[in-house]
Image (spheres, helix red, strand yellow):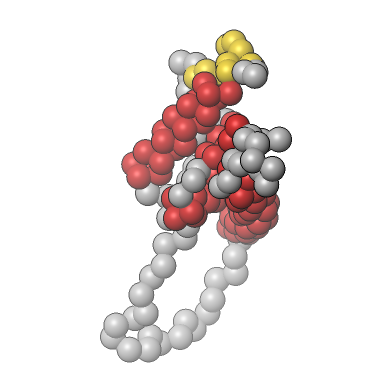
Length: 183
């Protein structure tokens, strides 16, 4: 039995909005399209360990999270499912209210040997303290978000494994058949 669900579509400003009701197959196709769009975005932006404002996302963060959950739960190839989880965890790098991209840029050790220690270290002024606090808070939120997303995606993996276990043998012990393993 086909069902229909509220559907969102992308507006001119790149955000998702309600449009019409979709069938399950259309929802899965739309989720796949959103995941693909996010993967292209990741390749273009090269996120690394930076934190970006979630307003940069091609759709709302919750819509993308749900798209990844569906894609992971319906993916039949374990290796590809693992890659989807890794890509989906990048959503944690997008937080609300960030504004300008926050980057950690590692620097190499002084190649000329040890530098002379500073004779007088300048105290960090209030403006820098505020920036450091914003930076620390954003990375703490991203860390918490990574754990939250990992738990969501783990649940999607369990759904996929359960579905595969039921679908692996559509024939019951009494010889009757269940469509796609559903009872």
